[in-house]
Image 1 (tube, helix red, strand yellow):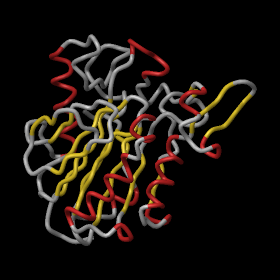
Image 2 (cartoon, rainbow, N blue to C red):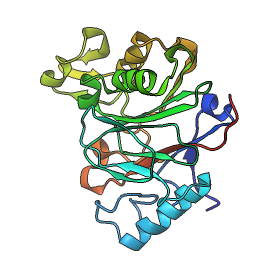
Image 3 (spheres, rainbow, N blue to C red):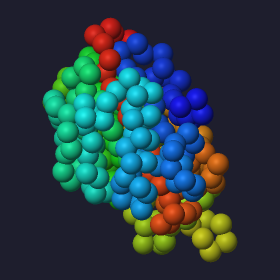
Length: 251
């Protein structure tokens, strides 16, 4: 486990009541190119995935059996939960339960952590272009405010590694779903700024810009560190982002 490489958040690391990390492709037991693969659905040997998951969850002090994991479907469906387990057909989870980690699986889509340290409300969202077009992050913030008493103005957000505008080429039918300022044209090709699209949604719901942290990493053009379905297709593994409330301390 000494070579396990995790991505963390500067802003979330300053909060004593939450613990977060995202895995990379580095440090697992699976043969290359899978490495630290956390999915059972990519042709990896099940025993490798089990061991990789033990390494990842253990590095955070979490357990897989004690975590909440959605069956992602590129929707804008979010569930407020109070128990561990698997949750059908959703791409976001919200909780106020200490000791209940939330998990999403990614390999180019954007993991978004939402945390209100004052009211102790936690959310985790899987945002691909479809979910982003359906404003899943804005919907998550609204749900946290209306159902859990969160304050959007005091909320911290972390937008993790994902496909970057440097590499995320999309067709015109996808580009036309988004505003012009979120799409870059280079020659006859179009590139979507997925992180900026979600940042705009967060700002529109009342988050302050200084409370939003955006990872500079692009999963597609950083092959030494990240799995990428766009880059490697069927040879790509999957990563996980996990976050949990760990005690009752505020801040």
